[in-house]
Picture 1 (cartoon, rainbow, N blue to C red):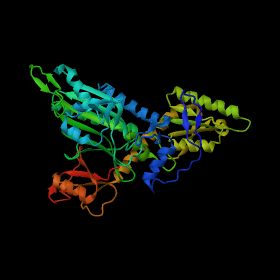
Picture 2: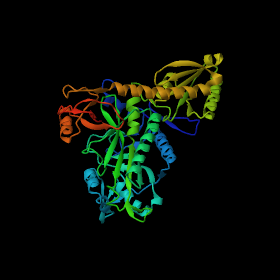
Picture 3: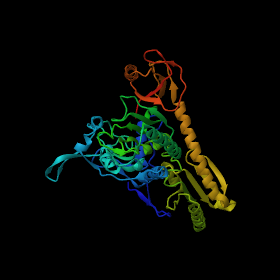
Length: 489
């Protein structure tokens, strides 16, 4: 069945999914299959590209990703980061300078070995992440303490040969990726940057209505080459965790092999301290998974391509009158800064309702002859399905207020669900499929035993203080240290 193109009144065109393709799988029955079905039927991505795990961003999905990118740019520009764009290819000799780094990624790298028919003298690889691409240049850019802090970021594609089963947005081989890279005079200044990253993340996650935990990874699970790694983890409705991103403190672990040094005020040369912060298109997957329901997507207003859709309910003999009123409402909302669309397709209203519910538009405005006669507009919330009448004369203010309320309540519901999906346990027997909280003595031997016996991954210890007095769930020794474990998506 062919897709229809919806006429757009705001200089955009939205591809509509075929009408009435019912969602077969229920979210509560089989989350994994439900997720795959929602992504496909909402037309967020096309997985039929001939390289597995390298998917095509369709217009609707790409608009959502662009909204997320815009939020990221706004926050990092505001904290004096400068956007850069580095080349895709990295020479093997530069990649090999940081031995721990290459050991962590060598099984996931895509190699370029020929230029045309000619073998390359130095093999090249597609960046799996950009430390080894950026840091040879940082060594040229940083000369004096006056050059610091150096705060950069880029939004690019990275490439990793994911050997597990691929899944749209969550496990792919070409990854839409944000990464910030910073250089500092000392460890203390780098630590201030890490705390700033935590603050920025808090603002962004509130926009995206994604609850999360900041968990310091174990030494055996930290990013290759990092001094420490903090994972950004959320909980999916399936009870599995999803890592949305990570923040790394490197100390001098990369600046030494790449000779990134500065001259201090005494004329002495010192190695810089570095941090990074990375997030990916998994953010789209998290929004789909956390908020979606059996009717389709449910988008937070802050990331929705269309925040409000107007559906004219045409009456026989009064078609032009209703259409004219709908266009006037559209103009008012657009003037008020609402991302609005008017659906004037020649199909039944019910078909339009279905389409926009599937696409997750936060607010539907129904305008018919009876509403017009009463001076009213019908509002229908996508997140709750609640229907209400509002004064036509104050529609712009009412829409903005409703979108703000939806934003707040979506985050609150998601946080409540994550809290309810997190439980404290004192035994590794009969574990539920949730985010599990338990005591750990901190020793690797016990940590490994926890992972083996539970058949779950240790996500880490919480960055924020969570009071705990208990025993290590493995060895039974008293401890004040908490650890979180879960099966990962």
